[in-house]
Length: 124
Image (cartoon, rainbow, N blue to C red; front, side, top):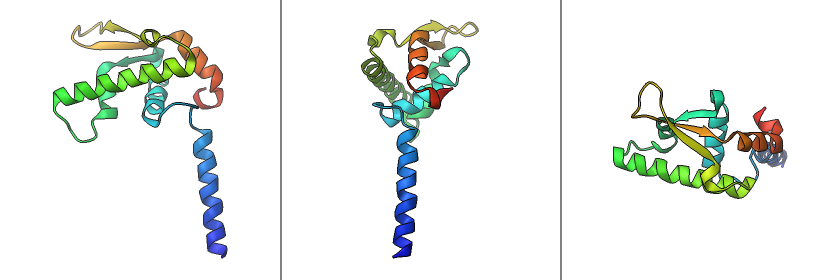
């Protein structure tokens, strides 16, 4: 009985901690990308850095590109719905200053402020 009670208390504590650390309304992969992006200097992300989130089984370059596009589309959709932005206004793209073949993604500063304000304990 004591073992079951201890297991239940630990399980309940882990569950409460996990729910407290979750951004309300966002799926786990999108929350992971958002946290990663918010920790980047100037909220600027190289497009290739998203590969780490979709490269779980070493897919072909075409599959990797498609997964990356799908993840970004879902990212925009969920953040737009959660924070009241248009999907096209979640981030902007620009060419990399040193390599024009690479893209930089810049998170909308108004969105960053809103996310940090609503989830201050998680992102500051």
